[in-house]
Length: 336
Image 1 (cartoon, one colour):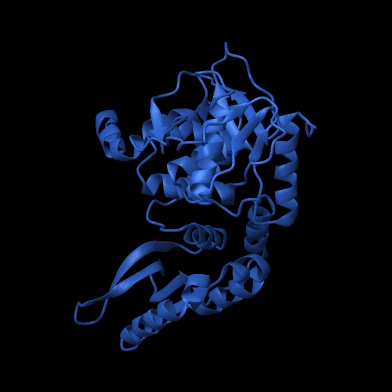
Image 2 (cartoon, helix red, strand yellow; image 1 turned 45 degrees about the vertical axis):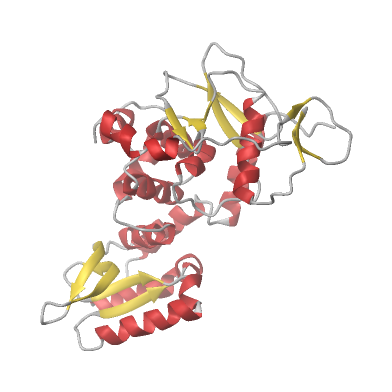
């Protein structure tokens, strides 16, 4: 997509600028009175009757802009959320990430990770806030998160057509920090996956050396469309799908039952997998898939998958390691 078309595609979203309501203007300085919430040292927000979490988050970002230089843009996972990309399982409390011009001061405050811009960013605005270029955002995230986490972001960014593949190719050849993880995740990514959990299931298939086609339309023997499957195992009639909590909802469950009845007279065979299956019982899932495909088990496949999980936010040790890295990056202690 050309730059002009990309701008037009996002124009409506970019113009939805956040504006604080009456009485919501952030306050710089120390406030001891009741009715104020602390964002960080010397930065407060008046209490608001609106408890919408998105509006609250927007208010906090707006407050941060009051203590940042004009060149500041949001980046890393803060920009990921502003772009509206799917995200992996994140800790409940995470910092705010910004990047500033190399000549500007770099604020150090509790809850803020500030880094330098290596080049002049584009004029990207999402939900009314300045954000770094998508390709640079992915590279910054790749310096912290694992391949499995990053595939989720890339799949979503590609699906939304936010990524300029030419600029991404330049970054992948640059040798900059994070490129190795970004390149590995990009190789495993696919724009047709429609959710974070589909991305996880897709990576599991790749680790198991099982080629699949995502979001494939399925037809009966008469050529009638009977539905669409998350993944069709290439060269077979096996349809593998993610079964999450939404599928246990009564309405969704009835829909799934009707869908399965529609498949009953077709050669397709559906298998559903949950996140618990993939994270806590991967050997069982591998054996099921291997038996269905009539092949031998290969231990290196399960080791490959466990390494991907261990380095991701889906592993408890991996989460602690990443959170500790963010704490060190902030470089400040709790202000009193």
